[in-house]
Image (cartoon, rainbow, N blue to C red; front, side):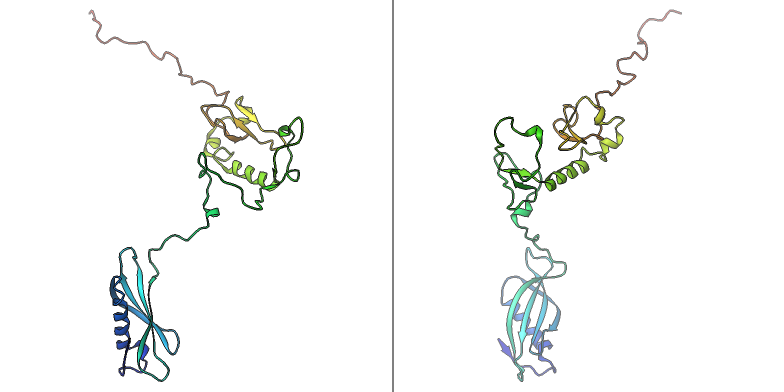
Length: 243
């Protein structure tokens, strides 16, 4: 597509160039071509004209038309037409590799989530941490991998900062801590001396809790003073009163 142009010293940004660019965008027949947003010279022979786009599903996008004028010529030609996102355009979320999409809680029954190659939390059996309490009494361990110090430290850090850690809302409002609770089952000291498992079905049952965690279901929680007490004698307001 080409037209002569004699209205300006720079044919790339003239009104005729704008008109040619608009017609090129309209010829795409992909949606309404709106107002001319602006033009910018890319070099001495090419420029880009931008138009507002009204295309369903592409809010904030714009038509970009690249035009060119050969050196020594005044004929405008169209090089490229494309629909491009503007500053406030609606865009699809950034693509994230599958391995980075998995979040805690995503694993479902029957699903599989193998560790990544060179997972820093794991190492070959015999090269990682050893816990006496979980070693088989006879024979060798059937595990092919051991947890690393980094893997254990990351776990302890998550537990410490989680819902059952010493700084959680429950812990801050509790009068007593897990370390004195009968329902607190300490983990092996080789793992950590500050964590255990809660065995109270009405509290954090089955979860790893910090020894400084606490809740209102501590085994030494005293009963309410008013619980089961008779506060007053019943009064029968329908009983006959003799004067």
